[in-house]
Image (cartoon, rainbow, N blue to C red; front, side, top):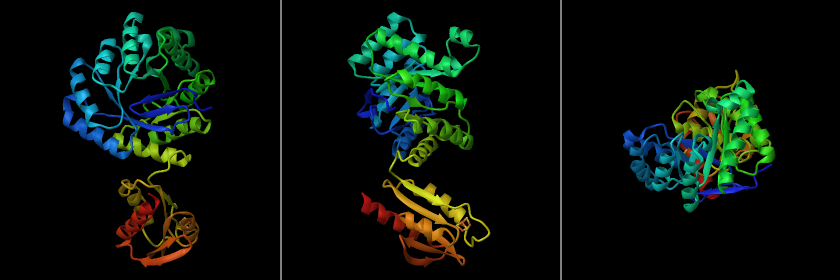
Length: 351
Ligand code: SF4
């Protein structure tokens, strides 16, 4: 059920069979521009494909422009209520704007859609369970999946009536079932690309689980074109989590993938620490390299055989495998740099 429609923002296609893109959002205001730019560049470096910032006032338009010029990835302006800010964002070079058309008078909305169309800038209709229209809340009694989908449809129609079709849609809720059901309802009848996300998903651990369940369920159904994992954490973690989520579904083929066992009484090395260190410190490797980090020889060689490279604990040291071949025995003190060298070597061969 991949979306038929495709939007393109600063060269990044979304929908229409394009690779699922990863989004994140800066968490630093424009008043701390230096820190904001550093965060945005870190997100770009981590693999964020589309980045969003809140544009809360007119003073932010100039630094928005500067930030957009510092990046090579698209920069999206998040506008909630003020059409004049949407116009200012477009003037400042926004690659996409996120608004809720229902919050804007039609004559004002037309000014925005005309300007966006002239600049080939898409608009994301961003429906959120926390800010549903009053009449829908009265109709349904509370935020529901049906209400979210109806709100999205209504907002899309407002844009269509103005002959604007360069649209993406999101329907976010912190309730995973509600969010999943809303997208399923909406996707049945809509051709527009869908931006998936569980909003206010929580801290690193609970937000990761909620996002994996919500976004993952939809992607397995073939619904969704771009994702944002929303975490109460450094946004770089959102991107890293999104990469793992997509990779686990076979939808992302870059970076180091760690396969590791939970360990048990047979382990004679600290493979838990090694697996976590590899996942954290090998993030800069771009090629897809599967690294098995196993506690002992019971399952270690088997996993190592299926990975590009594997290490497994044995008698207090590590055995390094490439395929079926034992390359060498390595002491725990030396394992990290030697494993890194192997991974870099494999990455070079693959790129
Ligand atoms: S690979 Fe070895 S250490 Fe790891 S869980 Fe299996 S038996 Fe235990």
